[in-house]
Image (cartoon, rainbow, N blue to C red; front, top):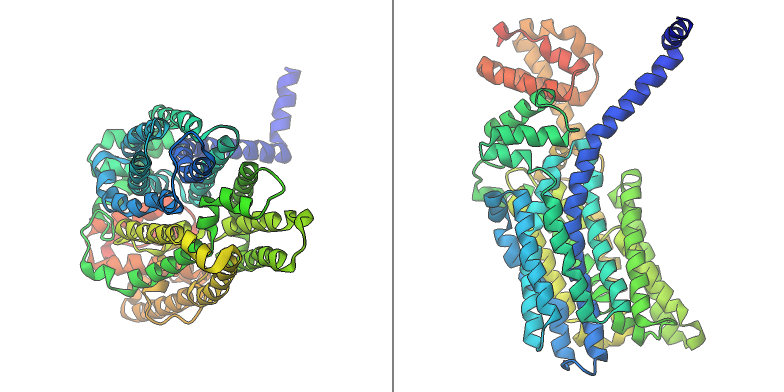
Length: 571
């Protein structure tokens, strides 16, 4: 009895109550977030395998140059090994969207792993250059084929609070796969590396059976019961009743929203500023990424370290380079929300120019071989800073800057453009070295970074922390003089406030019902959403209730109470 009284007294203590509430809240949040993290991590196992394909040409080129038992290849043939996979990526991108919609996100990823496993076997038992070319061409198609499943799966299974961080892990795990190729290449012969890599897609296929299909895709396929089970799994292994509200909102959005991606799109969407301006921005970023050297240095790292007389084995140096690339991606994940994309990008581009300058300074300064650690360290620093921004930036922007009507196709077009740039950058590398020397090529990279950075400073807005609606409206506006979407948001908010005042004059009865709450709430974004719902006054009550349900699913606070106060009889 005494113990029960003590326990009851302890629970009545306000401090203990707050502590218990905090613990329960944290536990609930962790349970809701954990399934999403697990689903994305399982997907990322597949990206480790595809990341290994990006690092394998580096191992292959170095191994063939040193080989005395395998077939010999000229520099011209080796340049195709570094580039041929990239030229075939756009072919995969063209069919990626329909392929993803036909088979589903999860099954599309599983099916892509099957030919990948066969490709590793082709590498292992290849006996002529055309075997290598065939394997690399298939890899290029597969890289393009997984673009849509990977991007859409993450966006459709995660909640907004986790979406940005989990998106950035895709690049992180891809670089991890590249690092695995470098590490294995420093220990084993390239045929043995291919034999080990064969296991990764097999593991990925089996792990993908453990996670659910995207609920968005299941709803589009009218598999409503499976969609509810998937959503319940992703929201913390809860029951269908617990996710009923979110499921109803999602179902209504997919089938009734006029801007849903399932709706047909017009060719005009791809000639409007809302597509052309972000496409130009992403193309510039891709151009800077590939022609500022990061693609060439990663592909031909073994040869470059040998030319620079690195004070360690060239394969070990390549592995260390992969470690710095991975650290750069981790730094990007940690800093991008704190600093924003613009500050992080321009700071790291400046640091990259300084790091690259150490190589020609060392060479032209005749500092001696006892200081050959200087250019190697400069190259490590360059890879670190490039992976803090330019390596990941275009993929982040692709998911933000396009409208829902063009996002899927525009993503494929942008990815194809990026891989075209990568192909030409790798294919031209040996020719540029012959004409300019390696030091001259590094100076060219510095100039590309400097002048490209000036262009990027003018055309790239700050999108971090902004909603997709604000970003899309910024690019849709034909006259943008600011480097942030804030100016567009302020102008839009002012226009909406003006419309609210006009509406007040013409619909006094309805506005008077909500006058007190509107005046007390100064949040412009609430006013915008409030105004949009009021604009539905000519619609049917069913449409209005549907909008109200969507708002209720996202906000149960004061802004929702304002909508709740609207009288259906006044609509």
